[in-house]
Length: 634
Image 1 (cartoon, helix red, strand yellow):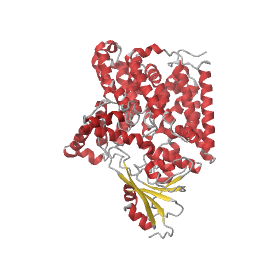
Image 2 (cartoon, helix red, strand yellow):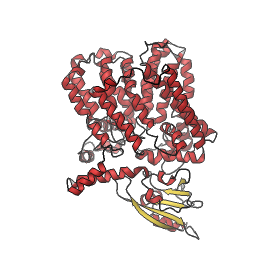
Image 3 (cartoon, rainbow, N blue to C red):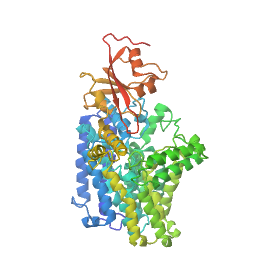
Image 4 (cartoon, one colour):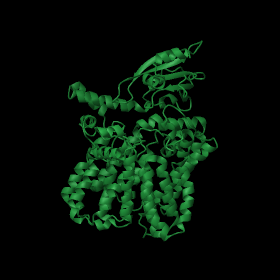
């Protein structure tokens, strides 16, 4: 019989087990296929079929022979906070199903590197101009790979985030209650936390910051379960979850601390579980960041792949102050914030002209980029969740008992704060508000643990005030340029025709047009290629995607066109065509596409201007083909 004394909901335990097992299977399967040179459509299709049917079988068996979730009650969504979460979940599912992925980083390096691996049949060091294809973690891509390779479409890629988002309330509730937070408090916050900007907007996208949250929560859930039951399987799943978490992003490495704190008493109480933890660790190594770190060391001499990265902070004080300003600012920004651009400009100019200028000298990438609408590339926690937490602490200040922190939960959640401080003092990146997405759970949980009562949640004014702070996320999701649920293109055209707020409407039209085409933004360039072009050389910047030139998938091969370490012009032999942007040839060779064609003895057959991002100017792209008698100039 199932042990109901475990600090887990039966359905949460079931779904967590299946999800972790499937994630590990896909990651290990991709590694195995790569080792035998079968990382191709047939191999990935087999991996997808076995993983999908195996997961369905495991779920049905672990769920007591039922397909329906245990404990699920539809009437709970009549309440405001569950209803708000339900809207966010539906927006993620509907938006992800309707629209192709348009995440900028995903299109620039995560998807292209999958195509490079599939073209060769195995993982390899690509060595292109965009070094992120090689040195960054691959955990997200290994989940996206099987359906992408099998069906030659990105239509299913959003499920990598959407499925964990559906699991999030149960995971949050289980972690909070198992580590000492009052059940009545956890019941409220399990619906509030997923409505944070960085979680809700990434749930329907291919951004890779949110996925780590699931692995982190499951690691803590199974560690807490093992502490009560001593089950070796729970310890193994906790260790495996921790490994998967690091395999998604190297910035998650500090979060091994709170997981280790949660597992330590398990090993003292049940010493035999060390054996299962060791065995799970041996498997987990292959799905963690370790293989990438080894490859980075072999090819660059540094485990991170960027030994001299400007993002590494040498002055901890600058990192602590700079990251505090960026993260704190993102926590104060509502999901809908029209003056964001003006505030960003004011703040960035302030840091260059005042006493804060010393931060910029040490923190090179110190720049505030909060969006007008919550967006997957820039949003942090947001004012909705952070403001709700502050109101809860103000209303319930009489119920704060610091003595409640003297427990395992206090140590675990305190570990999150230590991990965050370590991150802030060592890494300087403008994307910190979203990179820290998995950290927010423990950061928020610590003050909630100190509350001895949930009386604050019974105050009508607190509920309505909190709801007012959280509601803008629904507008942001409905109007999200990447996945709009409203016909905003038509609306903006009507506004322009009527002369209503024409300046704002023109800006809106530009933004929505760019996002509507971003999944295949370079299609106009591709249409100018020779019909028989199979081998394409790409000469764009790291912020320009080569994905469009691989289409239709399986018919072309794209290779990065860059010089050697000495700056010598690459040999164009073997290429049918070169696609080059003016920015790309300038960054790579310091010349224009016209000069590149002249040096190679090629000719330009077409030019077109492309706007890949609404905030950027039009970029000129050129198509270069060889002359009948090619005579490259050295």
